[in-house]
Image (cartoon, rainbow, N blue to C red; front, side):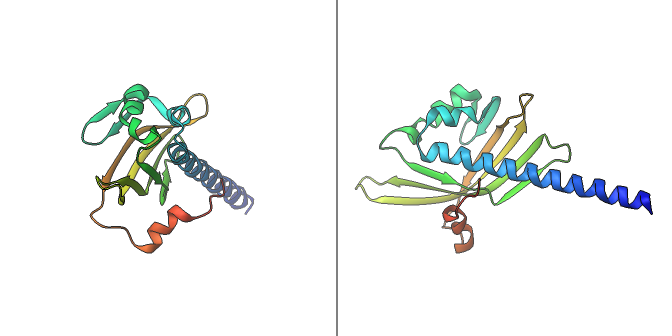
Length: 161
């Protein structure tokens, strides 16, 4: 009986530890988005792993290329973008994680009117030797229509990070 109690206690710690890691990664993803929302290129860069790959119509490799590819989002009159994780999955060893969720981009058309575009992002995070989570892979795809109201609401939720 005592062995079962010890095993249950250890499993409880394991589940709690994974839940903490999931929350850490979720908060990192939100902070990453906030860096783009606030147009802070230095903060944005700090979330990118030295060996990162961001995949779009081309592949940007490493922080310099990625920041250059994202430069329009940091321009004062550039497009606005924000995203939030809907799913966070962490491998059992706690060193690799996937985040996925909606993004919204707001641009201006040639007439100066605001245009809203939606899509889904996917990011792979790695916990580095310094204990920090950084993005190693990122990709997204646009959606032909806006997502359902529940998914859109993720972008309006109060963050508890």
